[in-house]
Every structure is written in C-alpha cells, then in structure tokens.
Amino acid sequence: MTEREPVYVVFDSGFGGMSIVRAVRDRGIGGRLIYVADHEGFPYGKRSDSDVVARVLAVVGAVKRNFDPEVVVIACNTASTLALPALRKRWTKPFVGTVPAIKPAAAATRSGLVSVLATPGTVARDYTRDLIGKFALDADVTLAGAPQLAAYAEAIWLGQEIGRDVLAEEIRGAFVERDGRRTDVVALACTHYPLIIDELQAAAPWEVEWLDPADAVARRLAAVAPQLNGDDETPGLFVSTEPPVMSAALERRMIDLNIDPEPIKLAVLPDRRGVA
Image (cartoon, rainbow, N blue to C red; front, side, top):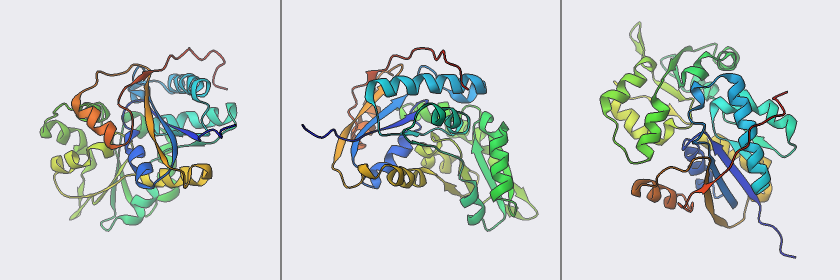
C-alpha cells in the first residue's frame, strides 16, 4: 500500500492567506498544500462575531470532509481570534492560528510609537486589546482600523489598480506624530496587507517597519506537523467557495507559489450544530 502524502490546508476568507503560503514555501515545507478561500463569505471583517464562527466551522467542516488534512492553518486574524476555540473543541487534529504581531512590534520600536493596522472588527475586539495589555505596556500603541484595505489588497492581487491616494487614506490613522516622535513600526493585523507592502510603503507619509506574522505562522506549522518537514514540495490546489474569474496576473501569482491556478469549487453546507 502506498503511503498517503501528508496534506495541509491554509484557509482564509480570500487571498490574504497567500502571504502565509509565501512564507511556508520559503521555509521549504513539503506535503500537499490545499489553499482554501471563502470568497463566498468574504470579507469576514464586516460580519458579526457569531456569524464568523458559524461560517468558519461550516467551511472547515467541508474541508475536513473533502481533504482530511493533517493540520489546518487559519490564515486570518478575524477567524483566528474568534473561531479557534470552537474549531479545537470540535476536531482533534491541530489548528495553527494567526494573531497580530503586537509583541514583536513593541520590541522593535525605537520611537515608542507603534500602530496595529487591522480591519475595524479586529481593532474593536477585546482580544486585540488584551494582547496590547499583555505584551506592549512599554509602547504607545495606536489601533488603526482600515475599512476597505483588505478588499483593496484583494483587488490588487487580482491585477486591478488602486490609486496611491486611496491607499493613503486607508492607512492614514496608523501614522502618528507626537512630541517630536513618529510611528516607526506598523504591525499588519490582516493577512491581506502583507501582499501589498510595496504599495503600502509607496502610499505612506514616511518609512516604517511593516511587521508581517507570516514567518512565525510557518514556523509554527513546521513544529506542529513535523511529517511535512523534509518532504518534496507537491504542487498545491486552489479551492474556493466561489471561485473568482482568473486573471493573467492571478495565474502568474499562483504558479509562482507552485499552486495549480485552476480553481476547484468547495460546496459549503450551513453549520447546524451551533458554535458551543
């Protein structure tokens, strides 16, 4: 009997999790990657907390039935902060979450002014504020909500052009000047944002260090799923609850990440068991 190739899933509401995939590929993690995008439910940042949890449970349930992965990476800050407890209660195989890089941001700042750039939902959650209270008491942290930035990053990833002035308005709240000091570190608390770091820097009023948690997530994946380490990298699959129209730019990006650009539709049934 041929031994089954280890399978792992990277899941996000859209293409934001591709920033995690890039870090995973850079670390040489093997196995079969299944990239799952819930484009039918995108964006999660505008949904209620209970709706996000129910949606994530339903999508992950479909993923488990179809692919039976060894591990699932929840490559979304919103889904991680809300749904991980329910996911871990329901399924025994490991989940790797993504949380704002507040601790390393506080350690990296020289000016003492740090910003967390996130969706309005992540900004409003107690979880984010608890991280600041736990890891960033010595820094002056600004929470900057960007209502449309995830959608703009998604559009740019698909090959559309978004004006620099539009991006500048989205990130304006993350740039603070106080007592002769300026924000010098911005923690990117949405996996979509690292996809457009070059565009963000071009739109920024001054240069900052942009902190991307992707490599930390990739390291955690390697730690919890050692069966993936040292295996040959197999071309990945792209699965979406509502596959987008494939553009030439998107196809190139997928191929660069060794993912088959032909999308597979994932049918999702409503989760009727509740979130408890």
